[in-house]
Image 1 (cartoon, rainbow, N blue to C red):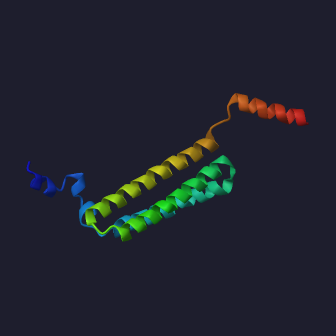
Image 2: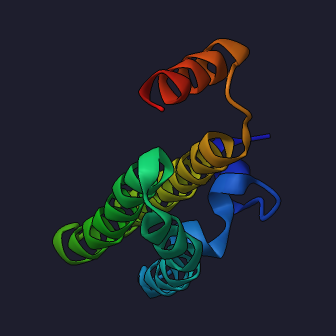
Image 3: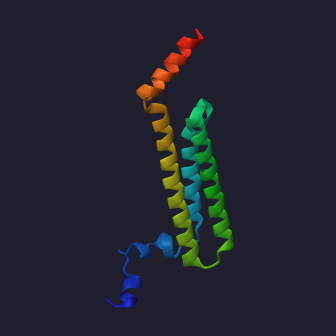
Length: 129
């Protein structure tokens, strides 16, 4: 297969219209919807407080900064292919970081304390009583 044939092959990942011919608006629209949907549980986690609230707040801030970075990329990069690839990479990073952040929050809330931590907490309560 020649180089020219590979550039025209529609089955290749790099030849998808969203990575070749788009203005970048579709990436911003999808990222905005993703941010809005992701902020709903993150705001609830932040309101709950504790360690999970802190992780949720950091995740929400990173998510919004990622969306802002996408807007800057869309406005600053004039070449079509590099702009679209940067937008795709930024969106992927936003999705992965949000997944990691929410997973950490769930683990912080859902995992039982270790027996040692529970015995320390119990002994400190009984000593103060």
